[in-house]
Length: 451
Image (cartoon, rainbow, N blue to C red):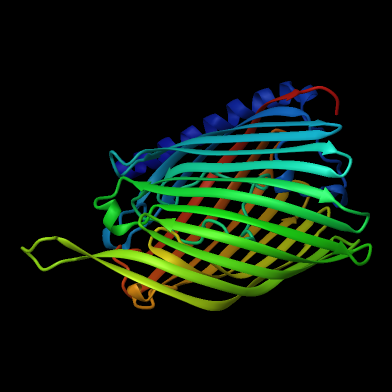
C-alpha cells in the first residue's frame, strides 16, 4: 500500500509540474524560440553544443521520477528504490568579435523514497573561454568539474549529452558504488596559425579525482592526480583533410605511486561537405611505472600493512578513431580508443580499450530519439595487481516529446554492467537498470547584447 501511495504522489507531482511549466510557456513566448513549422521535414535536431543560445543567459528546470533496481550500484548490497529528482541548469554564452565565453552549472537533488538517509545533492560545472590575442594567435581555457555519489549525474536531454572523448584523460568508463566523488579537470591551450595550411597547438591539463564517504578509502580507492602536456602540428592537405604529428606527456599520480607516459602520434582528420567526418590518431606509448601498494600484514603483527613497490617500463601501442555524420535531423557518432589512463580509482595506470556510440534522430515535428552506449575494458599495467581488469558496459535509450517551445518531456531506460577480475581490493561488480520519466522546462532566456 505504501508503494502505491508513493507512485501516485510521484505522478501527481509530475503532472503538477507540467501544468505549472506549460502555462507560463504559452504566456511568455515572445522571449522564446518560435515553434517549429508544420512541415515535418524542416524540424531540426538539437545538438549538445547548442544548449545555450548565442549571447544569452538561460535558466532551465528539470524534474524526473525514476526507479533504480540497484540504487547503491553494488550487487553485494542490492536495493531498489523509487527516486524523485529535481534539478536546474544555468547557462551563459557571450560572443564578441575576438572572444567567446560559456558557463554552465547544473545542480540537482535526489530523494530516495525507499532508502532514508541516502538522499543526494550533486553538482556539475563547466567553463570555456576563447581569446583571439593576435591575428594568428589564440588562447583557450576550459574547466569541468562535478561532485556526486556513485554513478548519479544530472538529468540530460538532447541539448546536453556527453560522448566518449578521444583524448586520454581522467578515466570516465568506470563506475563507483557507494563513493562520494569530487573530480575536476582544466585545460589551457595556445594555437598559432603559422600559414594558411599549417597550425601549432600547445596545451597543458591538470585533473584530480578524490573519493570520500567510503570506509577505508585510502586502502581501497586511489585518489588520482593527472598532469598532461603536449604539442600538435597539423597541415591541411586539401579543403577537407588535415594530417599532423603530436607529442603527449602524461604524469599519473596515485598517492605515493607515480606513472609516466610518453606518446608520439600521427593524426589525420577529414570533414566532408555532406556532414560526414572522420578522425584518427595512433602511435607508440612509452610507459614507466613506479607503484607503491600496501597489503595487509600477518594478523596481530606490526606493521598492520606492508608496502610493496614495483618499478618497470614497457612499450605499448595506442590510438583512437572517430566516425560521424550530422544533418539537420540526424546525428551519429562512433568512437574507439586504446589509451593509457588512470584506473578510475580502483587501479593505478591501465590500458583502456573503449568504444562508444551516440545516435540522435528527429522522428517527427515533436519527437526525438536518443540512443547511446559505451563499452570499455581497462587492464592494469602493474604486476602488483595480478593482471586485474575492469569491464564496463553502459547504454541508454530515450524518447523526447517537444510539448512547446519551452517544455520537453522525456521517457528513458538506462542499463549498466561492471565486472572485475584479478586482485582488486574494492568490490566493483554491479548490474543496474534505471527507468525514468521527466520534464525539462526553459524558465527564462535573457538576451545579452547583440546576436
